[in-house]
Image (cartoon, rainbow, N blue to C red; front, side, top):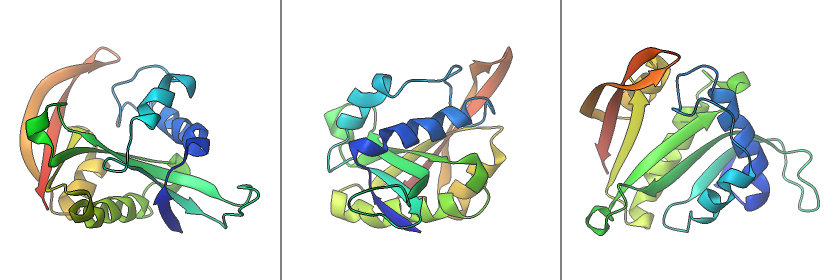
Length: 170
C-alpha cells in the first residue's frame, strides 16, 4: 500500500469511489452520481497546501498505471473560504466499498494528520452524518472530538439526517 499525492489522471478513480458512496446515503449529501468533468475544477483547485491523497495497492509503473489500483482518497480544503480560517482545513475521505473496514481510512487520515504541520494546518474538521457509525468511529479513534451538531440538516430519501462536526487540534 502506498499513499501519494493525486494527479489529474487519478480523477476518474477518485470520482468512481465517490459515486460508489452515494447510494449508501452515509458519506455524501450528493443524491446522484457526479461526472469527472464536473469535478475537474475542484481537483485543480487543490494546491500544495490542500492536497488530495490517494492510497493504492499494486505497483505503479512509470509507463503504465495498470498494476496500481486506487482504493481510497482523502482531500483537504480550505475551511469556510475565509482568510481568518487559514490554519484550519476540512477533511473528506472516501474508501472503495470493497476495502472498507480494513483500516484504509485510518491510514489515510493518520497520514493527513502527520502532514498538517508541514502544510501549516493546526486544526482539522470533518463533517459526518450522525448515522454513519463507521466514520464516527474513525474520527474518534484518531482523537477527533465533537465540535458541533446540526440536527436534521439534510434530507436523504425523505428522511431528515443530522450532521456531526468533528474537530482536532494538531
